[in-house]
Amino acid sequence: ETGVTQTPRHLVMGMTNKKSLKCEQHLGHNAMYWYKQSAKKPLELMFVYNFKEQTENNSVPSRFSPECPNSSHLFLHLHTLQPEDSALYLCASSLKQGAEDGYTFGSGTRLTVV
Amino acid sequence: KQEVTQIPAALSVPEGENLVLNCSFTDSAIYNLQWFRQDPGKGLTSLLLIQSSQREQTSGRLNASLDKSSGRSTLYIAASQPGDSATYLCAQNSGYALNFGKGTSLLVTP
Image (cartoon, rainbow over all chains, first blue to last red; front, side, top):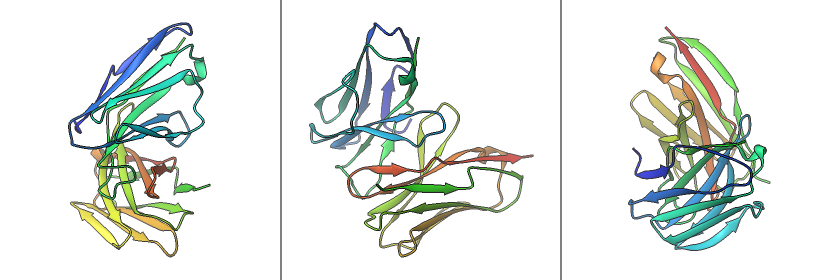
């Protein structure tokens, strides 16, 4: 374990379902990130939270809704997804946004939309 | 737009060989560069972090270099082993977030 825990590890959902992904870290970090990893594409930044404030929404469709209740927890709420949203969703944290001490990633949630 | 390019996209070598993975980036405003390893279906494991003021970092059989002026980084793996088989990702930290390349898929055969 890296110190960043993501649950669930796997998720299969229908296009009309509502589900949430959870990310938790106890590294004392203040910035948290959601990335999407699709086949044959580089990791895509989705959202950034710095000290609980959202600082970036990288043109992500509204069917993805992030929530950061405190610096240790980050959620990604999913609603009315499309099959092309199937991907590995990775959470990361760092001391602060753009920190020079590096980023720590979780193991990811493999999402399949049917 | 900041771009990170990794060459080659895939590499297959026999066990014991030394190898070099290449990463190039377009944004000169780099805070640091981080190399990660990713096993199939898994998350990212940090291997090495090179600050913009550094030229190289070493950890065991791994050595990473950084040349800001040319926008390049290399990851050198010595005496490769089958357990090194994975995808290797480089990520540029521009002070905002990490920008990733597509990765190099490495297969080390016994």
